[in-house]
Length: 202
Image 1 (cartoon, helix red, strand yellow):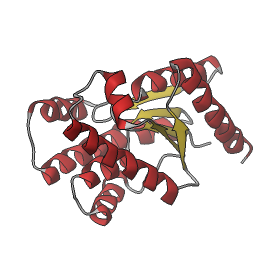
Image 2 (spheres, one colour):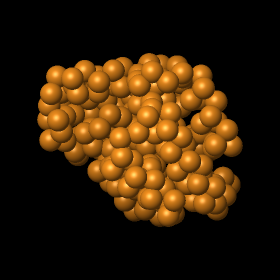
Image 3 (tube, rainbow, N blue to C red):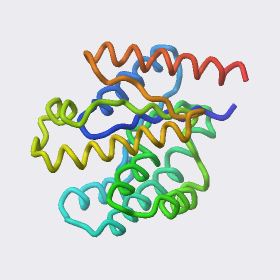
Image 4 (tube, rainbow, N blue to C red):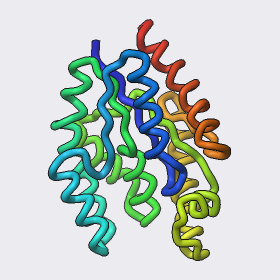
């Protein structure tokens, strides 16, 4: 049986990385084989791109293409082989990040979606969970830049995530990011358990 691909998404500061780690551990406690991935990263090329993105100020399309290159390598080198072996893949960001963040920079959504489909070979997560939190709360939680300009930009990205979730309601669900780490984790686990039950019985 093909494996199951779960991705956690959301704006910076909502706790995706922490929740992905907790989710992976819960799945392992169930006896499932789990592979954790992050974007950009997860391969030698991806980690090199991650380092470059953190150091350089790039033009929007240059940045988008680097994210896509990292994703293409991750899909071929890690995700597809893991799914072929029936493993559960837990991702910290995937395609929706490109559509939300790069889309917020004014890049054409249709072109981004087309390029993303091309570099992933059409691979989509079986379940994407968008952890939702207002920009000011996420910035405060993540100890990020609290300037109004930054808050406004992040709120635009948040709105794009919510709109993308509405457009893809069958496979993209929104999780309330308010509350403690444990509370958010319980919300995520309830949705994952339900999705895995459907997958196992189907």
